[in-house]
Image 1 (spheres, rainbow, N blue to C red):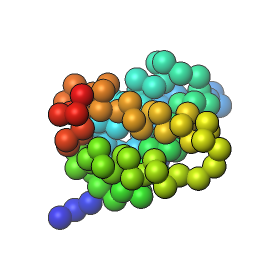
Image 2: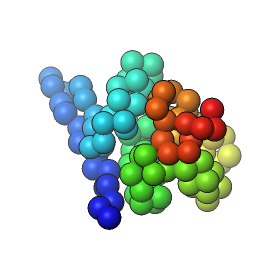
Image 3: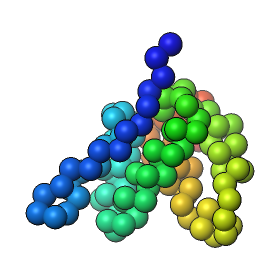
Image 4: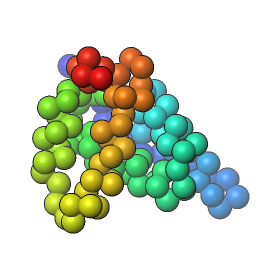
Length: 108
């Protein structure tokens, strides 16, 4: 079985980031959604957080379960508020993707 590895790619134009990609169509669609809703620094932070999340769970987006998300969140360190804000984007993924990831779509 081939495991997907998230690789963060930033496309620049005129000194600004114009596109972020982690190499998976579902995740990249989510990053486009975040770009439309959030400020540039938030967009960059979400992309990095997703890269870390997928490196830790070591699964492709469609294989991720709600248990993977909760395990990841429970092992985060730092101020509770900071962890909650940074991980909110990971938690939102299944609710914003109609086809969802793995069993997360069924949890909606």
